Length: 256
Image (cartoon, rainbow, N blue to C red; front, side, top):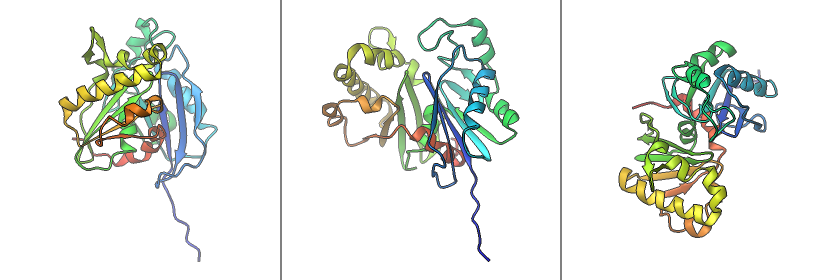
């Protein structure tokens, strides 16, 4: 009799400030459909985000569980703070007080589980990204370059408590989120923005003394070659697809 192996299928969603992407993967991390991407709709309430992901899922294969990575500070699936989604028209626009009220303290993980009637994990998007790239040895730091700056840290493969490195002050009373974000990339151009990335890496290396730093996110590909060559052997550029691939590995993550 022919035996058929079974595999748990995971809907993996990567929520960004500009786009929301998703696909379905098996337990080995193999994509069972090309990733689907839609513009992030604004204004974006928790209910609207859940419905947007529901719409994405309808064009994808069946799944048994889902992993969602989204920007901001989450604790045990509860939103402490999220950028972008509290803004009326997206990143860098006016904060909408009613949206801020809806998001703060919202148990988004439970809401996804109840809506889809399936197990769900919701983490910071850089944490899911990190799950897809770390090798589980030493202190590994992950930063993602997109609308703003994402950050996560792992020790011996275990996820460290999250903190918003993006909100740390830097240079002339601004934050890393603004200093290396999408708006400044467009204003400065690739070369001068890449030099800022080099300065940021030099600053953060003194703080964390990591064994390895991974740089991902959609804008990592914009770092100029001459800058990449001087970042150091402890720095690795990784594909932005990790935000999807990490959706499977996130289920086996231990937390410190």
